[in-house]
Image (cartoon, rainbow, N blue to C red; front, side, top):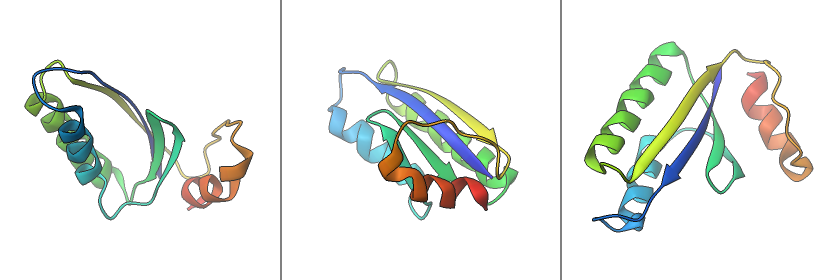
Length: 98
């Protein structure tokens, strides 16, 4: 399984770098691949893993009210992901195929 994450980090009361650090912490130990500056894919071990990371992302949004918004979507292994990022094709394939 893999998940796609699209997010916005907005300038606010707390430093943007603090928001980014909190986001990175959610995905420690997880294989990821950036698609854009604010979009990436991540390998998910199972639905429980996805739900735990979803809760962690909700906590980041709560901790940084009005500074962090996200859409996190789970996909089955091998589900098509259309990308025009040929340089990353091998890494993307390694995440979505398992």
